[in-house]
Amino acid sequence: LFFFIIFDLLTEDAHADDAGFIKNNRSNRLELSEQILLRMLEIQKRLAENYWWIYLEDVAITQWRLGNLYVDMRRFNSAERLYSASLDTRSEFDREDIYRYRPATAQCQRSLGKLYEVHLKNYPKAEQCYRKSIEILQELCENEYERCNFIRSLQHSQLLLAHLHSDTSSEQDRPAN
Image 1 (cartoon, rainbow, N blue to C red):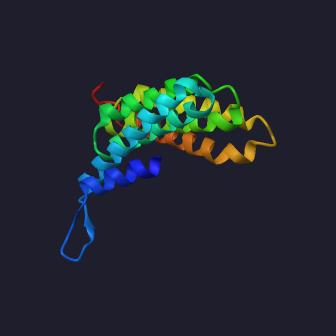
Image 2 (cartoon, helix red, strand yellow):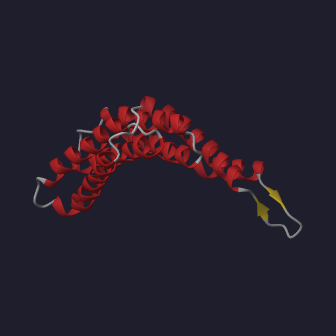
Image 3 (spheres, rainbow, N blue to C red):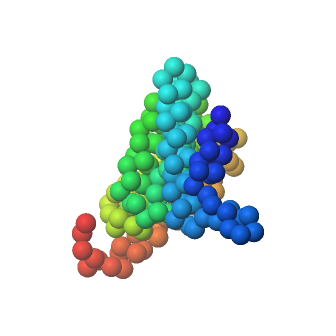
């Protein structure tokens, strides 16, 4: 089903040059990706209404991917909205199997933190997101048998937080947002 959606969207927006190659510029590809992801999200949400235990994780993943896409498109408010929606969706099933679901929640917190830090210049919110990511990953690392799966992500979140503090401490006169 997803293949047909993607194929239909690709063929309706693309055009061929003289040699028969399909041409799209970067913005068209981003807009096409947005259309595909929005259509997938719509289908996944409908499926999740009846089979939430199967499709709700897909909804959260697609929301996160849309957030990433909106960052690439420089639509930062839309990115914030989708990252937050993904976290809200994840909250419905996040504790079911912490080793399966919580790492992606930590990743989403990290993505949202990066958005706040780099693009929206909201440093307190960035710190809050990085700290939530670290908290989740520290919890996962408490299990000595699972620690190896999450230690690098934990280190990455800690480095982002340290970088945020080094940047904000060296620029104390930065205007508040």
